[in-house]
Image 1 (cartoon, rainbow, N blue to C red):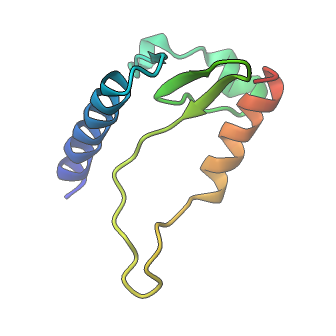
Image 2 (spheres, rainbow, N blue to C red):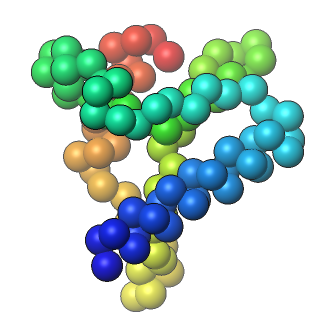
Length: 97
């Protein structure tokens, strides 16, 4: 099941990338290999690496992490991980993005 969700997550990222391209939205797709992640970001900032940096003209960049999630049937909502959200918030705040 974990490998299946990982593959679905990869497909979801590719579909999001296709959508950005279709709508001519500028972005950087960030390589997710372990070797490309700065240990200092994790150590000093408690950060995570997003999948995309999207340029919003006259505003700046926003981080986007694309994930495959199932809707929680009981609540009809997507689950959000507060620890993961805090890590992305730290990254955005520390780099003033």
